[in-house]
Image (cartoon, rainbow, N blue to C red; front, side):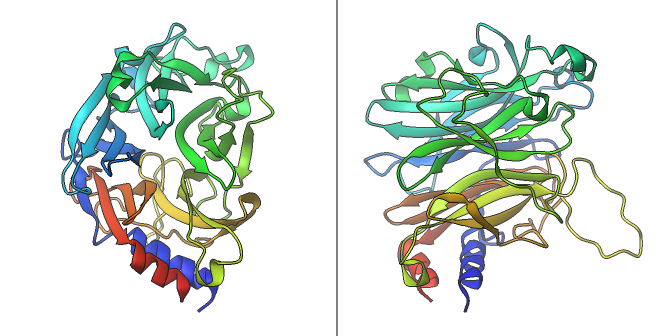
Length: 367
């Protein structure tokens, strides 16, 4: 079995659409309602924490202000290795307002613990931030601009007492909207991955910035790369939105070099397509209903990125629209906890989870 085949099999065992179980449900079991877009973290006592946002129906084409859309950011805790979760913290839109702008919608987020406490990065759509003058007509009434903020505290329990501070925004029309942060774990440092959209919302790219040096809140920092991973050429030509990078154990064929998997949301278009009646039906993915792909990177060098899902997506829900997105994988001592949003028969998207024991994972990679 080739290394690529080993990695594909590992990915399918980890992001197992049939074995996954819902762990956090949306507020309604219908289209446009979901929970997710965050990550899972573990503390020193083995407790699991999940951060994400509740999203209710809302249509960005007519202005987010016309619907509730991303209305709550929440953190859940599990003391029984993911068997049950209970909410320990939450923020409404107004609680995430900054001095410069008012929040219309809450999007992707990520949480981590470090020696000084906890920090939570969250992306929101805000009004009060203008488009560049030459493109001002493209800003839809009732819509805003996406930026990334950060909350910091001495512990996860005191995060709700903090205030959101601007971390990253852009004025460049090519990547005017920045959103959906995730932690890019490398061999020497952890950076912040995120996605960007142009002023026209016609595509989505994977980006990365330095966590320490970019607190100037400017996207012009030389530590920010807006094209770290190129979009694909087939099913993911419109979107390659990284959501998680997972360093793998150095076993088997992967013992001589550091290998990391990059999971991403992809799509061929940002709007639904009517297919020809006699054409081959295939999952295409579009905005809010993305499907999933993966690739791998060697020795923390993005230039080595190789797609495992070059001609077709790897992760498609067997239910509803097929949407399978916002994959996150936590590496814990006992194994790997994978979470993602998965479309259901009722078209809602709960956060689902699958667990892969460490010994089984290493055996798969060692073959």
